[in-house]
Image (cartoon, rainbow, N blue to C red; front, top):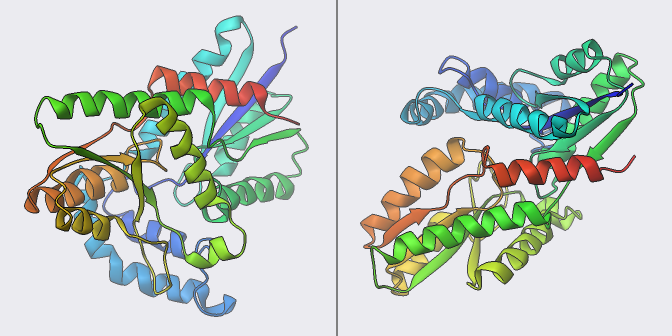
Length: 320
Protein backbone atom coordinates (compact mmCIF):
# COMPACT_ATOMS: atom_id res chain seq x y z
CA UNK A 1 0.00 0.00 0.00
CA UNK A 2 1.37 3.42 -1.00
CA UNK A 3 2.01 5.57 2.01
CA UNK A 4 0.60 9.09 2.14
CA UNK A 5 3.21 11.84 2.30
CA UNK A 6 2.85 15.54 2.93
CA UNK A 7 4.54 18.76 1.82
CA UNK A 8 4.01 22.23 3.28
CA UNK A 9 5.23 25.21 1.26
CA UNK A 10 6.28 28.09 3.54
CA UNK A 11 5.90 31.69 2.46
CA UNK A 12 5.32 35.15 3.92
CA UNK A 13 1.74 35.73 2.85
CA UNK A 14 0.14 39.04 1.95
CA UNK A 15 -3.08 40.99 2.46
CA UNK A 16 -5.96 39.59 0.40
CA UNK A 17 -7.85 42.90 0.42
CA UNK A 18 -7.21 46.56 1.14
CA UNK A 19 -8.88 46.15 4.54
CA UNK A 20 -6.38 43.42 5.37
CA UNK A 21 -3.35 45.67 4.83
CA UNK A 22 -3.25 47.18 8.32
CA UNK A 23 -3.64 43.91 10.28
CA UNK A 24 -1.12 42.27 7.94
CA UNK A 25 1.41 45.01 8.71
CA UNK A 26 0.70 44.60 12.41
CA UNK A 27 1.40 40.86 12.19
CA UNK A 28 4.58 41.54 10.26
CA UNK A 29 6.03 44.11 12.64
CA UNK A 30 4.98 42.11 15.70
CA UNK A 31 7.56 39.46 14.78
CA UNK A 32 10.86 40.17 16.57
CA UNK A 33 12.57 37.66 14.29
CA UNK A 34 12.17 40.17 11.45
CA UNK A 35 13.07 43.30 13.38
CA UNK A 36 13.18 43.92 17.15
CA UNK A 37 11.28 47.09 18.00
CA UNK A 38 12.30 48.36 21.41
CA UNK A 39 12.07 46.07 24.45
CA UNK A 40 10.04 42.86 23.96
CA UNK A 41 7.09 44.07 26.02
CA UNK A 42 6.65 47.07 23.69
CA UNK A 43 6.97 45.16 20.38
CA UNK A 44 3.25 44.74 19.75
CA UNK A 45 2.42 48.33 20.73
CA UNK A 46 5.11 49.72 18.42
CA UNK A 47 3.93 47.34 15.68
CA UNK A 48 0.40 48.68 16.10
CA UNK A 49 1.66 52.27 15.76
CA UNK A 50 3.71 51.45 12.67
CA UNK A 51 0.83 49.58 11.03
CA UNK A 52 -1.52 52.47 11.71
CA UNK A 53 0.89 54.98 10.16
CA UNK A 54 1.91 52.91 7.16
CA UNK A 55 -1.44 51.35 6.23
CA UNK A 56 -2.74 54.23 4.05
CA UNK A 57 0.48 54.33 2.00
CA UNK A 58 0.62 50.54 1.68
CA UNK A 59 -3.05 50.42 0.68
CA UNK A 60 -2.30 52.77 -2.23
CA UNK A 61 0.54 50.48 -3.29
CA UNK A 62 -1.67 47.39 -3.21
CA UNK A 63 -4.42 49.28 -5.04
CA UNK A 64 -1.95 49.76 -7.92
CA UNK A 65 -1.44 46.00 -8.26
CA UNK A 66 -5.13 45.09 -8.14
CA UNK A 67 -6.17 45.72 -4.54
CA UNK A 68 -4.50 42.70 -2.93
CA UNK A 69 -1.40 40.58 -2.84
CA UNK A 70 -1.42 37.70 -5.36
CA UNK A 71 0.92 35.67 -3.16
CA UNK A 72 -1.65 33.27 -1.70
CA UNK A 73 -3.16 32.55 -5.13
CA UNK A 74 0.24 31.94 -6.69
CA UNK A 75 1.50 29.81 -3.80
CA UNK A 76 -1.64 27.66 -3.97
CA UNK A 77 -1.07 27.23 -7.71
CA UNK A 78 2.53 26.21 -7.00
CA UNK A 79 1.30 23.69 -4.43
CA UNK A 80 -1.22 22.23 -6.88
CA UNK A 81 1.40 21.95 -9.62
CA UNK A 82 3.93 20.40 -7.23
CA UNK A 83 1.41 17.85 -5.97
CA UNK A 84 0.62 16.82 -9.55
CA UNK A 85 4.34 16.55 -10.30
CA UNK A 86 5.10 14.42 -7.23
CA UNK A 87 2.16 12.07 -7.88
CA UNK A 88 3.25 11.29 -11.45
CA UNK A 89 4.84 8.00 -10.47
CA UNK A 90 1.80 6.74 -8.57
CA UNK A 91 2.88 8.00 -5.16
CA UNK A 92 0.39 9.61 -2.78
CA UNK A 93 1.48 13.18 -2.03
CA UNK A 94 -0.51 16.02 -0.47
CA UNK A 95 0.84 19.56 -0.78
CA UNK A 96 -0.42 22.46 1.30
CA UNK A 97 0.73 25.99 2.08
CA UNK A 98 1.47 27.86 5.33
CA UNK A 99 1.83 31.62 5.36
CA UNK A 100 3.57 33.47 8.15
CA UNK A 101 1.70 36.77 8.48
CA UNK A 102 -1.71 36.22 6.90
CA UNK A 103 -3.96 33.16 6.50
CA UNK A 104 -3.68 30.33 5.76
CA UNK A 105 -1.34 29.76 8.70
CA UNK A 106 0.53 26.64 9.77
CA UNK A 107 -2.48 25.25 11.66
CA UNK A 108 -4.57 25.06 8.48
CA UNK A 109 -1.77 23.27 6.64
CA UNK A 110 -1.40 20.82 9.52
CA UNK A 111 -5.16 20.17 9.50
CA UNK A 112 -4.80 19.11 5.86
CA UNK A 113 -1.85 16.88 6.69
CA UNK A 114 -3.82 15.15 9.47
CA UNK A 115 -6.94 14.80 7.32
CA UNK A 116 -4.87 12.99 4.68
CA UNK A 117 -3.15 10.81 7.29
CA UNK A 118 0.33 11.61 6.02
CA UNK A 119 3.18 9.57 7.45
CA UNK A 120 5.77 12.34 7.12
CA UNK A 121 5.89 16.03 6.24
CA UNK A 122 8.45 17.92 4.19
CA UNK A 123 8.50 21.66 4.90
CA UNK A 124 9.90 23.57 1.93
CA UNK A 125 10.85 27.22 2.35
CA UNK A 126 9.98 29.23 -0.74
CA UNK A 127 12.88 31.52 0.12
CA UNK A 128 15.93 30.06 -1.67
CA UNK A 129 18.34 32.07 0.50
CA UNK A 130 18.20 31.47 4.24
CA UNK A 131 17.63 34.23 6.73
CA UNK A 132 16.14 33.98 10.18
CA UNK A 133 13.71 36.74 9.22
CA UNK A 134 11.95 34.61 6.60
CA UNK A 135 12.74 30.89 6.59
CA UNK A 136 13.78 30.88 10.23
CA UNK A 137 10.60 32.57 11.41
CA UNK A 138 8.36 30.39 9.22
CA UNK A 139 9.97 27.16 10.44
CA UNK A 140 9.73 28.27 14.06
CA UNK A 141 6.04 29.03 13.51
CA UNK A 142 5.41 25.59 11.99
CA UNK A 143 7.36 23.71 14.66
CA UNK A 144 5.62 25.64 17.43
CA UNK A 145 2.23 24.69 15.97
CA UNK A 146 3.25 21.03 15.80
CA UNK A 147 4.49 21.11 19.40
CA UNK A 148 1.40 22.90 20.70
CA UNK A 149 -0.85 20.35 19.00
CA UNK A 150 1.40 17.40 19.94
CA UNK A 151 1.76 16.34 16.31
CA UNK A 152 4.59 13.81 16.16
CA UNK A 153 4.70 13.23 12.40
CA UNK A 154 8.33 13.10 11.19
CA UNK A 155 9.35 16.48 9.74
CA UNK A 156 11.85 16.94 6.93
CA UNK A 157 13.05 20.48 6.24
CA UNK A 158 14.32 22.20 3.09
CA UNK A 159 15.51 25.51 4.49
CA UNK A 160 17.71 26.85 1.68
CA UNK A 161 18.58 25.95 -1.90
CA UNK A 162 20.71 28.72 -3.44
CA UNK A 163 22.40 26.34 -5.90
CA UNK A 164 19.55 23.95 -6.73
CA UNK A 165 20.18 23.12 -10.43
CA UNK A 166 16.59 23.46 -11.64
CA UNK A 167 16.17 26.78 -9.87
CA UNK A 168 19.44 28.08 -11.33
CA UNK A 169 18.47 26.90 -14.81
CA UNK A 170 15.06 28.59 -14.66
CA UNK A 171 16.57 31.87 -13.48
CA UNK A 172 19.29 31.77 -16.13
CA UNK A 173 16.85 30.99 -18.94
CA UNK A 174 14.67 33.92 -17.88
CA UNK A 175 17.64 36.25 -17.97
CA UNK A 176 18.84 35.00 -21.36
CA UNK A 177 15.36 35.32 -22.88
CA UNK A 178 14.95 38.86 -21.51
CA UNK A 179 18.38 39.88 -22.81
CA UNK A 180 17.48 38.63 -26.28
CA UNK A 181 14.22 40.63 -26.20
CA UNK A 182 16.06 43.70 -24.93
CA UNK A 183 18.64 43.51 -27.74
CA UNK A 184 15.79 43.76 -30.24
CA UNK A 185 14.88 47.15 -28.72
CA UNK A 186 18.30 48.72 -28.21
CA UNK A 187 21.87 48.51 -29.43
CA UNK A 188 23.15 49.88 -26.11
CA UNK A 189 25.21 47.75 -23.73
CA UNK A 190 22.85 46.08 -21.24
CA UNK A 191 23.56 45.94 -17.50
CA UNK A 192 22.08 43.09 -15.45
CA UNK A 193 20.99 44.14 -11.95
CA UNK A 194 20.11 41.54 -9.32
CA UNK A 195 17.65 43.03 -6.84
CA UNK A 196 17.21 41.14 -3.56
CA UNK A 197 15.05 41.92 -0.56
CA UNK A 198 17.09 43.88 1.95
CA UNK A 199 17.89 42.86 5.54
CA UNK A 200 19.24 44.68 8.58
CA UNK A 201 23.05 44.59 8.51
CA UNK A 202 22.98 43.24 12.08
CA UNK A 203 21.55 39.95 10.82
CA UNK A 204 24.59 39.35 8.64
CA UNK A 205 26.95 40.43 11.42
CA UNK A 206 25.30 37.82 13.65
CA UNK A 207 26.05 35.06 11.13
CA UNK A 208 22.99 35.00 8.85
CA UNK A 209 24.08 33.38 5.53
CA UNK A 210 21.63 35.34 3.36
CA UNK A 211 24.14 37.43 1.41
CA UNK A 212 26.49 34.48 0.92
CA UNK A 213 23.57 32.43 -0.43
CA UNK A 214 22.67 35.24 -2.84
CA UNK A 215 26.25 35.34 -4.12
CA UNK A 216 26.22 31.56 -4.59
CA UNK A 217 23.06 31.78 -6.70
CA UNK A 218 24.40 34.63 -8.82
CA UNK A 219 27.71 32.84 -9.40
CA UNK A 220 25.89 29.72 -10.65
CA UNK A 221 23.50 31.73 -12.82
CA UNK A 222 26.35 33.66 -14.40
CA UNK A 223 28.08 30.43 -15.40
CA UNK A 224 25.07 29.81 -17.65
CA UNK A 225 24.34 33.35 -18.83
CA UNK A 226 28.00 34.35 -19.22
CA UNK A 227 26.94 37.85 -18.19
CA UNK A 228 28.18 39.52 -15.01
CA UNK A 229 25.62 41.46 -12.98
CA UNK A 230 25.37 43.81 -10.00
CA UNK A 231 23.73 42.91 -6.66
CA UNK A 232 21.62 45.46 -4.78
CA UNK A 233 18.83 45.45 -2.20
CA UNK A 234 15.25 46.68 -2.18
CA UNK A 235 12.36 47.08 0.29
CA UNK A 236 14.00 48.69 3.28
CA UNK A 237 11.74 49.45 6.24
CA UNK A 238 12.52 50.56 9.77
CA UNK A 239 15.12 52.79 11.46
CA UNK A 240 18.12 50.43 11.31
CA UNK A 241 21.13 50.04 9.03
CA UNK A 242 20.15 48.00 5.97
CA UNK A 243 22.17 46.11 3.40
CA UNK A 244 23.65 48.32 0.71
CA UNK A 245 23.64 49.46 -1.97
CA UNK A 246 19.91 49.95 -2.29
CA UNK A 247 18.23 49.34 -5.63
CA UNK A 248 17.22 53.00 -6.14
CA UNK A 249 20.79 54.11 -5.35
CA UNK A 250 22.12 51.57 -7.84
CA UNK A 251 19.79 52.75 -10.60
CA UNK A 252 20.91 56.37 -10.01
CA UNK A 253 24.60 55.40 -9.97
CA UNK A 254 24.34 53.40 -13.19
CA UNK A 255 22.59 56.29 -14.92
CA UNK A 256 25.32 58.67 -13.77
CA UNK A 257 27.92 56.27 -15.19
CA UNK A 258 26.24 56.31 -18.59
CA UNK A 259 24.17 53.10 -18.48
CA UNK A 260 21.46 53.21 -21.15
CA UNK A 261 19.83 49.77 -20.79
CA UNK A 262 19.07 47.61 -17.77
CA UNK A 263 17.61 44.17 -17.06
CA UNK A 264 16.53 43.77 -13.44
CA UNK A 265 16.32 40.30 -11.90
CA UNK A 266 14.20 39.74 -8.75
CA UNK A 267 16.79 37.37 -7.35
CA UNK A 268 15.34 36.56 -3.92
CA UNK A 269 11.70 36.19 -5.02
CA UNK A 270 10.12 33.10 -6.58
CA UNK A 271 6.58 34.50 -6.83
CA UNK A 272 5.08 37.75 -8.00
CA UNK A 273 4.01 40.04 -5.18
CA UNK A 274 4.25 43.70 -4.24
CA UNK A 275 8.06 43.77 -4.47
CA UNK A 276 8.03 42.62 -8.10
CA UNK A 277 4.72 43.98 -9.39
CA UNK A 278 5.01 47.43 -7.82
CA UNK A 279 8.58 48.13 -6.74
CA UNK A 280 10.39 46.60 -9.71
CA UNK A 281 7.84 46.78 -12.53
CA UNK A 282 6.48 50.24 -11.64
CA UNK A 283 8.76 52.16 -9.27
CA UNK A 284 12.22 51.19 -10.51
CA UNK A 285 11.05 50.99 -14.12
CA UNK A 286 9.78 54.56 -13.90
CA UNK A 287 12.99 55.69 -12.20
CA UNK A 288 15.18 54.08 -14.86
CA UNK A 289 13.12 55.38 -17.77
CA UNK A 290 13.07 58.90 -16.32
CA UNK A 291 16.88 58.68 -16.27
CA UNK A 292 16.92 57.78 -19.96
CA UNK A 293 17.37 54.01 -19.69
CA UNK A 294 15.60 51.20 -21.52
CA UNK A 295 14.32 48.91 -18.74
CA UNK A 296 13.10 45.32 -18.53
CA UNK A 297 12.64 42.83 -15.69
CA UNK A 298 12.87 39.06 -15.84
CA UNK A 299 9.70 37.06 -15.11
CA UNK A 300 9.04 35.64 -11.66
CA UNK A 301 9.24 31.86 -11.46
CA UNK A 302 5.65 31.35 -10.26
CA UNK A 303 4.42 28.04 -11.76
CA UNK A 304 7.06 27.67 -14.49
CA UNK A 305 7.25 23.92 -15.10
CA UNK A 306 11.03 23.88 -14.72
CA UNK A 307 10.74 25.59 -11.34
CA UNK A 308 8.10 23.11 -10.19
CA UNK A 309 10.49 20.32 -11.23
CA UNK A 310 13.12 21.97 -9.04
CA UNK A 311 10.76 22.02 -6.05
CA UNK A 312 9.94 18.34 -6.63
CA UNK A 313 13.65 17.55 -6.67
CA UNK A 314 14.13 19.38 -3.37
CA UNK A 315 11.29 17.42 -1.78
CA UNK A 316 12.65 14.07 -2.92
CA UNK A 317 16.16 14.88 -1.67
CA UNK A 318 15.03 16.29 1.69
CA UNK A 319 16.86 14.61 4.62
CA UNK A 320 15.22 13.29 7.75
